[in-house]
Length: 546
Image 1 (cartoon, rainbow, N blue to C red):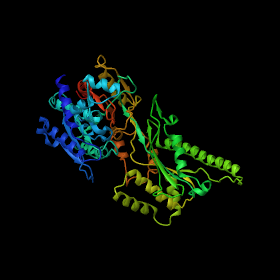
Image 2 (cartoon, rainbow, N blue to C red):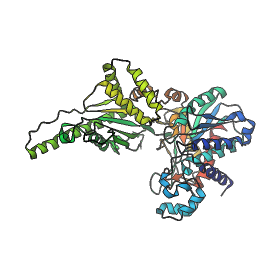
Image 3 (cartoon, rainbow, N blue to C red):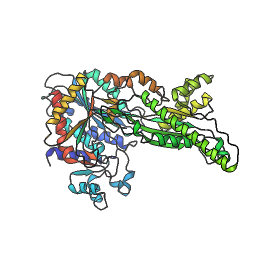
Image 4 (cartoon, rainbow, N blue to C red):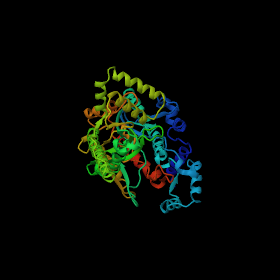
């Protein structure tokens, strides 16, 4: 193993040993660890003002973003490359009895040898080329590589012009709060030091696309994520008169059957497809047991986009929901007719209509029906919910429920709305002269390693990423319509769309190569991640700044 590999592996191990599970104080501790490492680099001992932490606003856990600015001295230049990544991980419940070893790669390796493993996992464990543990792949190793690159460049400060801005962010695994709040800092640094952000390199993990795939994927953009949410309102009834009502749970179930994993809803962009929508939540809203059928229910989906606008997504989801709603009504009538045939009762079909509206439609109805100041009413309600520290998705639902009540609607209905988080999609466009130049330079860098690795450039990093918040490709007019279907936008949740548009930082993802992120068999491939990747990033920086 080379000195580079040893140093990065040791750095990775040190970072993994700090349990920085999302939503815990570990996120503060890992920031302190990274900050302490940066302060010991000789360059930053001389330039203390260039390394600093920025606490998240109103954060009870004391989490913060960490920054370090390296200014090249070959000649004066404002060109700046951002090296960034997230410092948090998901939890370790999936490790079961091995959970206490999840953050101890060396001990975990020995413990894994004592249990039965899937064949591929066992093979990787025996090869000694893989490091196991929570966060080794997603993405403590990526952070370690960036830290090594920063330290290496700090020793070559007179060889390059331009600047390197290191940034490590918390809260990536759910709300992306770290990077969202970091945008304000990026804006301030841009003005203070006259920085021109020409490229951002994320080091989030890359992985095989299929069994036996050994390709190293480089991504010139990131998939977008919407969280379309559905408030289902039926017609309650006693189960003794079940055909007189319309079960909100049945409506929800049929909509899920229609949308979940429906490949017709995949978004294609220049030959690349998103994964289909996946249901993430389903519940009826009855609080206690009784023999009344559910009046309302709730569900939301992960909905990935490459180039599709929120407006188009909403239209497709409305069509899908209406088809499913109509099937429920039709099924109820058919079953009631059969029941009447076997009992001899007279059949009267229901007159339910499949009504599907958006939150903005509902808001307008409430505005017309409510005699007071609706905006003030909802704002006060939102504040009360925020003070209870409720999940943001639940707050969104509560706002919809309140708006529905104020609209005075009593008929069965599906209300479609959006809830946090919202991750914009972006990619480099070959038809854009500047962005095509970036792609060409990346291709040149990859060419230097062709004899060692098989690379493939893709347009969209397929997993959610903080890179979403550095560049936005959506049309602003359509985004305004989208936010009107986002209950509590600007109060309970907001993405600074204008700031992202103004920064407009081309964002790519290199990443350490690993397998099974978010699984107890998570592991990173050391020969590529600790040896070739850091050299590739150094080559890329040279191509842009030397």
